[in-house]
Image (tube, rainbow, N blue to C red; front, top):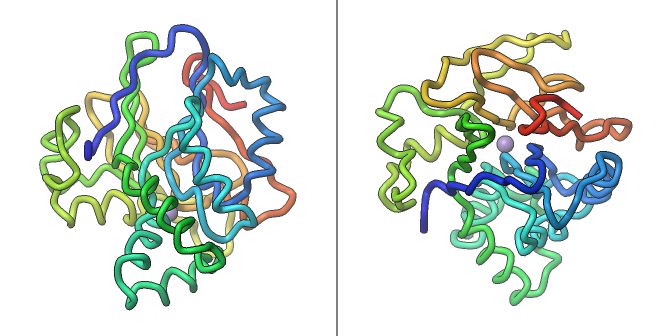
Length: 237
Ligand SMILES: [Mn+2]
């Protein structure tokens, strides 16, 4: 399994970024219609955490079969895989919104896991000559990160510690009781933009260095809609 999905440039349509869909399938579909998403030409790239907490986790996972939808591995997908493999991991998974998985028939669980095991750690895409990176939480800085971002890197060659950091470490932190945030980001060289999710911060995505945190906490706020970033046009929609 490849650790990095390097997508060819989309010359026919737009690439949009979203994150932390968390089972909010209906809100996602609504947003796609609102932005006039062209299912034949556009692509939707997610920074992970498609499942758990929201009402339609399985439906979101099934989008991975669509030609226009791509996602990186999030910590929630990782928890789901671990819970499937190891009984001890199911408690944490259920505590974090994974109960939906146990409503599925065994063969349906197998299908979900099959899809999740195919998720890359990063998605890399060039748009108008600039390289962009999607990763769930952060690019781990303390190990030679560039060594693992190569197109040919295999998932099994990436150290467990690196994967764990990439999907769990919080570099965007909300300060207590306020809607503002504290950035612990460090500029990632070689990329125009680095898209992450994982930490809900505010109703609009926040930027720090060349990071954009796309997690706007939609699953925690019934009134909130998803915000996409249109990489081709360089703006939020
Ligand atoms: Mn997460």
